Amino acid sequence: MTKSYGMIPINPNARIFEPNQRAMIAWNGREEILLLSTDLHASDSTMLLEVLPLMSEPEVKKGDLATFRKATDLINRKLYHAASAKGRQMSEGIVVPSGEVTFHEKIGAHDISVTHLLDAQGFVKWVMDYLKTLEIEGNIISEEMRELIEDYIGEGFEWFVFDVVTLGTETVTNEPIQYRFKTEHLFYPLKITSTAEGATSIELLILTPRLLNRFPSLPISRIRLKHDPINISQDELAELNEEMYKLLKGNDRMKLRIWEIKGELKAFDADLLAR
Image (cartoon, rainbow, N blue to C red; front, side, top):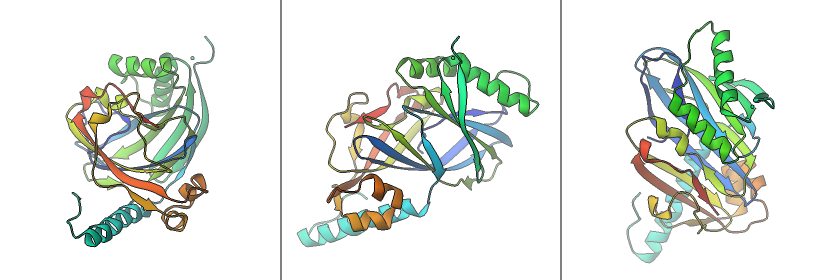
């Protein structure tokens, strides 16, 4: 199970289950494309507020679920040929304004708002105002979550994506959402999940012009490389995802690989940063 969002069920008695989340990251050293898709269900019907912290204002659009399949197929195909050539087996497989909404759109089952926050009270106010539109009274924001948002803002994070979905007891695959934003590091949020409980296993498809060796936040020892990185060409990337092709255009031999991160959710006290 992979989590990149903080999750807040509107029904406090509902437990949220996320058997799968697919994530792919393309980064060129200045901008990142983060593609996310989730499988979700709940123990009881509820609306769910998901919170995603970002370093800069993102462009948000519907993604393509096929990108995950194409990337995985490409990895498997190249690893198979490499293994065959070497005669070995493949590897295991805000008293300033506290908040401002800059984007709001429904994308399939998602109701997404991008909000510029300058203090944690802005986060709480956004949620409370949203609940009023649903005619729901009460505060569902835990002190732990409020403090976590305050930590993110203190670290320079000012942009937060709020994604509202409606869940039932049957698992549904939500449309993939693509976020493109400026960042000096390859970034994947982990700390936002620390208010949840249980163990998790995170798999990330990573695409960069070169291999990365600096990890200033989460120690590199926490990240397992699941297979030897593969080289992909511009033509192969164009077939994979047009937006990622444009992001990485001009790089002849890009590196594609899968990273795995495991651990207890409450133990994630740092986000994934790399360069």
